[in-house]
Length: 353
Image 1 (tube, one colour):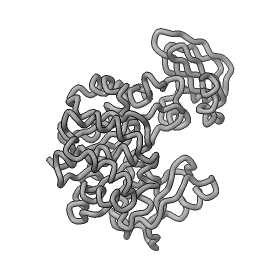
Image 2 (tube, rainbow, N blue to C red):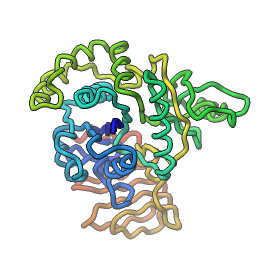
Image 3 (spheres, rainbow, N blue to C red):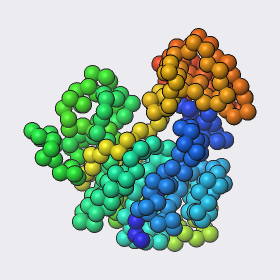
């Protein structure tokens, strides 16, 4: 009963425009066609390990009703509303102070709301292993590392000690360093070395361990949240957050704490993980026709190859003669671009504002 899960669900997923927009972002969409949104799948993945009452979803106030609509098993007070986006460190600090008001010996797992996991049984085994490790190592900060299947340049990497035979490794390993997103040549080297893993952005720690780390590495943030002691979990909480959250430093948990900690560990895992952060990653996991096209909606595809065509329900499209393209339509917005130019989407949509 002292296992808690923090689901971070405040992003807008702008790289998935026009499907993901401010008013209905990616985490609430069924982009993969599974019948469930990302946030619903995330909740179900953790439910065997976490009691219903121990979930917290941190999101924007504009999405609170969406969260409760899609996760009706949660109480309204389990949805924490940020008044502004301040990256992951303030988001996690806020949730931890709420947990502190309820349970001062909590074990916590933190996850984004929009990841894909295909082997949930293995995923749950890894999470339980992490909690077991924390029972013996109260100050440890853990992250889940993913065994790389390719030289991916879109993920950060975690370095662990190199051994002559990776079969001799332990399941929990000390982190030597965190590496930024590499170029292709460096990513290829990481994969060949065998002691580098993708950083999944899924974290585990004890409440005491992470609060000690905040106090050591982000003391100003701790001082700010300490002003709210006695208000968390009460009717005064939201007013305090609305007033003081904006003063938090805009910094990620990786930069702010994980990369500085002397007591960081990882569990190298393989449970069919992807962050589905781009159209290209969606294309990798989508079902395709005989010509390699990923089609969604009422579409007539003529002589297209290796192309994504995603059309919202209630509309129709005929697309002819494209190769390695992306065509997406939702809510009166249309995107047509080459798949390899998708990194420019965030830049392009700024031109619409």
